[in-house]
Every structure is written in structure tokens, then in C-alpha cells.
Image 1 (cartoon, rainbow, N blue to C red):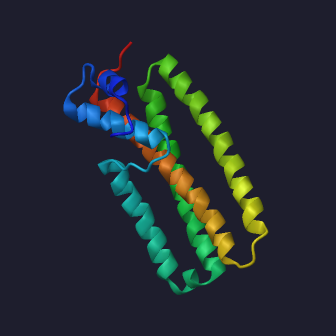
Image 2: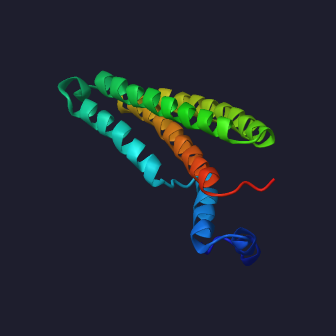
Length: 164
């Protein structure tokens, strides 16, 4: 919280309870890349990550190929969750808000794809099969983080009145 200057804290406090203020600070932190997990997102994370852990602990998940397949399944599950939350938000928001979120999401997808491609280019030059697993894990982490960010936004929208 010390990273926010007083005028920023003051702007967040306007018309907010201390609880809402804290949630907004955490939401902003999530948007700048810090991992923040809401209770709903945490439950979903547990479910998806439990399936991933079980897969990785199975005999087929012990090989590099198995780890990649398990992690890829997790990436698909997180992508489904991200899309589910995004669709709920799009139905919940007013048109200008939905348009702004859609534009932001399109930019995020471009960024994610470019970052994953850059990581792939780096990992491809490194010796060892573990870098293949790391590359797939990078996609999972970015998709999981974005799904959690959108879940936080959805919870804020559902718990507060949107300013018109």
C-alpha cells in the first residue's frame, strides 16, 4: 500500500468503505501484474490446479511429454475459465464499459501471444527438455492470472454500483 501516493489513495477512498477501498487497491495491483486471488478465483484455481497436480503425479505425467500434456490441459482449462468470466462480464456491463473491456482484452491477447512467442524463441535456444515444460507453464500462468484479474473485476461489479 505504500506504493500508492496520498492523492491516489484519496481518489480510491471517495465513496468507498474501507473494505471497498482495500479491494480496489488489490484490483489495481492485479492489473499491474501482481497476483491477487479472490475467494471465487481461489476455488477455481484449486480445482484446475488439483487436476494438474494429479496429472503430473500420475505415471504418464512423469515424463517431459507427459508434463507438457498435463500442463497443456491446464492451459485449456484456464482459457475456458477466462472466457467464461469474460462472457459474464460482457453480459453484466453497460455497452461503453463492455466495449472498453473488449478492447482491453484484445490488446491483452496480442500481448500474451507476443510474450509467449518471445519466451518460446528464448527457450528454443536453451539445452534441456525442461524448457519445453517451462514454455507451456508460462502460458498457463499468464492465462490463470488474467482469469483471476477478470474474476476480481466481476466481483467488484457485482458488489458495487457502477458509476454512469
